[in-house]
Amino acid sequence: QVHLVESGGGLVQGGGSLRLSCTASGVIFMNYSMGWFRQAPGQEREFVAAILWIGETTYYAESVKDRFTISRDNGRSTGYLQMNSLKPEDTAVYYCAIDLLNNYHRLIRADSYRYWGQGTQVTVSS
Image (tube, rainbow, N blue to C red; front, top):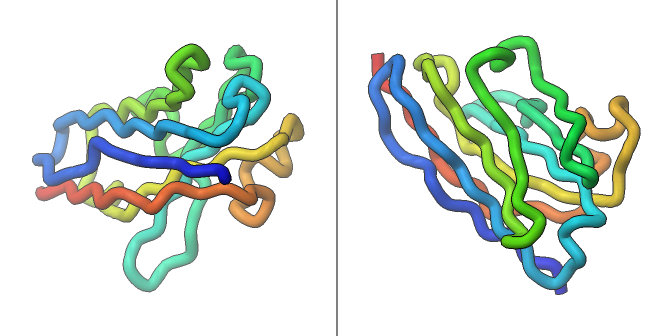
């Protein structure tokens, strides 16, 4: 059974940083691409970042490019989302997801992923 556990969310002032972690079990993690998505109250879940299973190719939403960095440690079966220069509009529940994907157009769509973490709240104060 696939299980994803997220951690690292919290409350931070604008301009601050947080690092989210997502640890997988029940899969050979190195075979799976990972995406991070977020959902603010009353809004649809939106793409934030993705990293291919081989770990060398990454994609970002325009709104987070140059502020967020996605990475992975296959030896620890863990993916990360380093978030810098946080803004109040980054406030949302953040979710990690994994699946056997290698196509950009699928990586950026939430409905492409079968396996999801429980979500972690990120709140950025102004």
